[in-house]
Amino acid sequence: MLPPPNLSFTLPSIHDNSKLDCRVYHPACLNGLPGSSNPRPWQRRAAVVAHPYAPLGGCYDDPIVHLIASTLLQSGFVVMTFNFRGASSSGAHTSWTSKPERADYMSVAGFLVYYVHYLQPPQRPPNATDESVPPTLLSAGYSYGAMVTIQLPPLDSILSHFTSPATYTALADIRLRAQHLAEQQTVISTAPSSPRKSLGMRVGGDEDTSPQHIYDRPRTRSFDREERIRKGVRDLLSRTKLIQTRHDGDPTSQSGKPQRQEPRLEKIDDLVRFRSAYLVVSPPLGIATNLATMTFSNPFSTWSIRRRGGSPSTKKHRTKEEEEAAEAEEKFIINPALAIYGDQDGFLAVKKMRDWTNRLSSAEGSQFHDVQVSGAGHFWVEEGVLHKLREAVLSFATGFSRDL
Image (cartoon, rainbow, N blue to C red; front, side):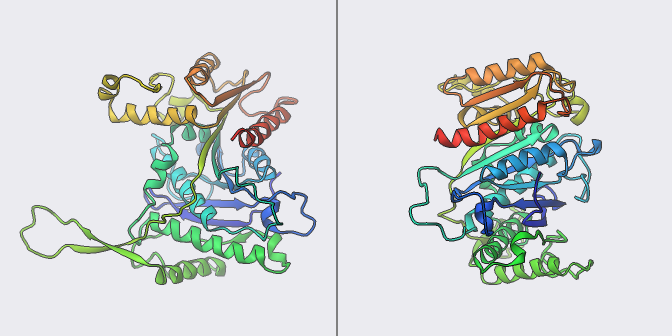
């Protein structure tokens, strides 16, 4: 299964600053370990894997999450797992709508994009780089995590929030942590052989992002390494070039006071441009959706897949929620995407699932595929099905890269 993580830390959620437990795993080609069995250079492929429903015990230690993550890791991906709010020691509580959980996922995806941007691999052999393979961010999830993955906005929409965030916000903190930790890992991976290369490192800490606390909050726990990450991010901010923007005050105010200057992080013009890909395993759609999230929108009830050249009048009469749902589904058509599920899944309306996959795969130019595993239930405990799941994940992870 999964080795010890290279990084274990926390991030603030962009929804409400709630603390999220996170882990990052590097493939063998990035660890620079003696006797590494993977001779291929890292191709800037990264993946996020989300876990099942927290109130039912879901967390990043779920065995199916481990299977998916370890398969991607062995395929050369940097893999990031995390605990949604309310799972394990992450902060806050599981929501009834899943909207905060979507923000949790977006927080992690934003971190990973900037982490990969700043991460420098060990020196590569001459002519080892395959420039024909673009960087890829694979958004994945199992069960409830798959359902949240389906509802995510497109990657460009997620990253727009991180473009030039105000300092002392969760968005800025995530960007600074990504840069600091990537630079730190680059030093470790390129340094002479050290036992730290094979050990996970715990960094991160309290996620109070108010100006007076975000970098200077007194240590409340005895984790020296968590204090070091806060100090590292504080030092990074002190030498980071900021831009000043005018903060619009209350337009009805008659005080005549000058507008407040708001410092922001600069936009990174050469930010790594990722191609998106999506993997969902056993999304509990059709039966368990309303049980798990109450008001969570069900893709089976609002078929609003946008075809190229679709009617403008149709789009004009959509609500904002319908437009967001259409965008979320369209990403499964225009990007490499795979759904894997069992035909004995008690948390799934199999017929509706087949209708959904058929609609997606039959859309013009669709890159969506699905794999139905005979005899598999929701928890993948039946004889022989784990092997089929792993093979499907492996085939997808290696296949869409060859097709680029």
